Image 1: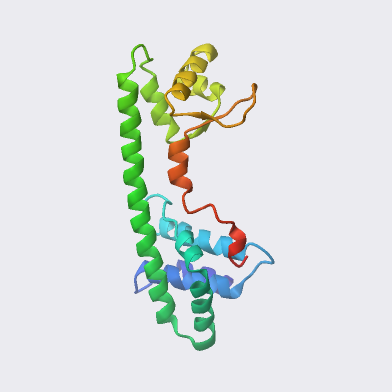
Image 2: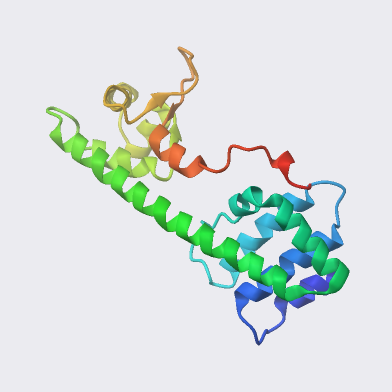
Length: 208
């Protein structure tokens, strides 16, 4: 692990994506912990690319590609261990990056379209508060909220926040997520649906 850490901080003469592929392979091969190695190794991909400036935001979800092709993923890791054939592993990793990038771009467009649709919907409503568009922007960063959160975000009274949230529920933008009468939470459900696509299968489908 110490040598892997030094490798991560070394100045490389080949592309950072290739370096990232090698880091992930080596971490999974070392398998340093009793549990969670697969999850940490996949997280390490996004953290490394963000740290190195390849990504501005940690939005690349390579795990979904590895999930869809998990048997090939295992086989290629093992082939690298057994034969030292790194080229086939790097090639597989690059395909994962390409597909994950295309998915991230598509999801970003869908989120922009969803926001525009809901913003237009708010503007069409008679008597809705001017604060409604501010709340909609907040939901992109806080898609699960309480009425108290809204009151704090917008610096308004609790009853005013409750009325605004109810308007969002009526318009189908928010859904109540707890089924309770107290301590209710509301979710920006269509936005969360986009973000969670591909994440439904359990992590147990990977090696840990």
